[in-house]
Image (tube, rainbow, N blue to C red; front, side, top):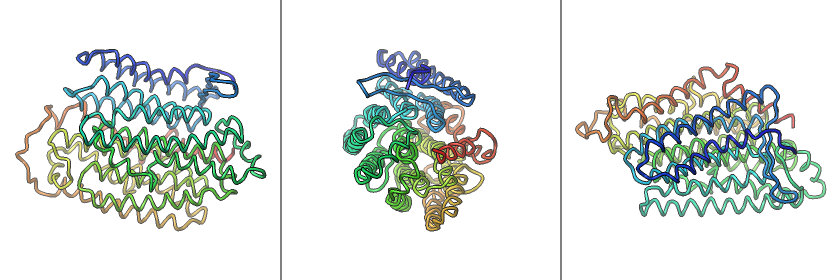
Length: 498
């Protein structure tokens, strides 16, 4: 594989270089830090748009650097990677604006925004990785770059949460490493899309390949928060709201889900994985996680912890859609990468605004908050309807295609899981909406902590309104060419041709 473009490297540099420069600034150089943050985020979106346009014209974008004989650092653009990279870049830009407002006057902003940039560098690197070794490098870089964000507050609770986060993610990374090394020994260098290599080795190495698949799957399942490897995620909610939003919508959990898609479709291949009966355990664990996460969410009064258990549940839709096979279910799984991202980031933005503006962290404290913050809670309500699966919000589209895929393949039990999950989603989300809009405020005299002409600071309010509208637009315009659904459908069709 030869280098054809340095653009994939420039996409990584658009966040890595600003992050490094931010580390060199003094804490009081806020204007320079803000410029670097916004410049890097805009540059990344622009570069990905440029590459996306070129890729659709048939251009090839590959960057290769030799680390050792037979071991390369490879960045390669394909449609699935671009899909994830676009999600990461767009939501990073929006989250950067939110974080600037959220952390105004806060401590350690230099460190925060530096590692914030490193985190999105890792996520983009995962998206653009051309082989399993490069993927693993960025997968572990993501662990290291997010740890300082989790412990940002420096409290005992934050430090303990960071310790738990490291135990899980480094443990998962170690298991993934064993799988990557073992696969490389048996099959040699594996570039994504070369599924014929694994297929050719089944007759002589079926047992070893099955063991290596489950090792890699377990390593990815940690970040994907699949039961019983999910506990780090609710604990990590001690982090500031921008970090929670990034973890749940763009970075860590999505890296795990994206890795599962790569493993099944681009390393083993869907036919090989099906022939070896590797996907049934994934389907079972994903289905259980969907119900388990929803049940746990029912009993959480802490706003962010309820959202965290919701993520545990919602993210496993992706794994379930992959496991039951078929173009329709795969379309639902892939488009849910985007749909879950924009809906969940809206929810965490709203939770952060409520906490920072009025100091309400528990759902039981939120009576009447919708009347005081109509834009914030209006955006939150849109996201809620999407998570439940009500049309025309984005989440309905994901569940519709997952359901169609289940019927297409005769996996009717999956339809029951989806219906049960939607009922549970309504059970733990609608009470929040009811409290916010229909209950009489019990703390009307609580003063606002944040100034602004509107219900809170503009830099915090604008992002939540934008992502709320995106959650609606992704559903309303799902049939339009260039929508997340249309791209996901094309990706699924291409994957089934491998």
